[in-house]
Amino acid sequence: VQLQASGGGLVQAGGSLRLSCATSGRTFSNSAMGWFRQAPGNEREVVAAISWSGRSTYYSDSVKGRFTISRDSAKNMVYLQMNSLEPEDTAVYYCAGDPSYYSISNYVSGRKQFKYWGQGTQVTVSS
Image (cartoon, rainbow, N blue to C red; front, side):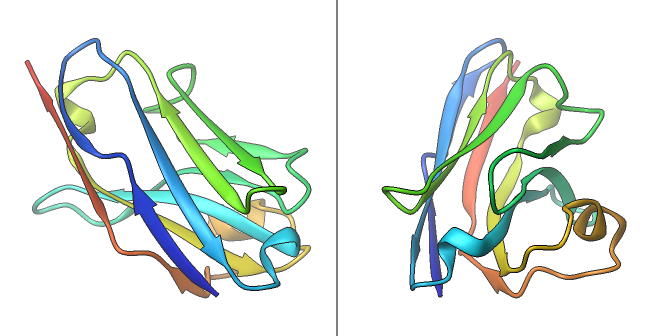
């Protein structure tokens, strides 16, 4: 499975961006997916996650109500719609996936790790 993240860029505070994660391989349809970010000097943190079925989602408190994760199984794509962006959202964003039917709570808690990772895409929010 290969993951390819795109859609990052420079945006003013209050603006929006949509990140895309293209997946290849036959296991996408049964994969839990997630978006992470890492700012300079900070640890990588989970931003959002979505179950293999798409029926369950998770958002970190810092992005809840502003970001939306979704998946399009027909296109093998995962998206992160980011609205009302803040300078604190500046980071490199990564998509990740794991062929699994486990609840995404396992990935959020760290009990399970995503197996596949894409390269990062830079998001910069200016004030």
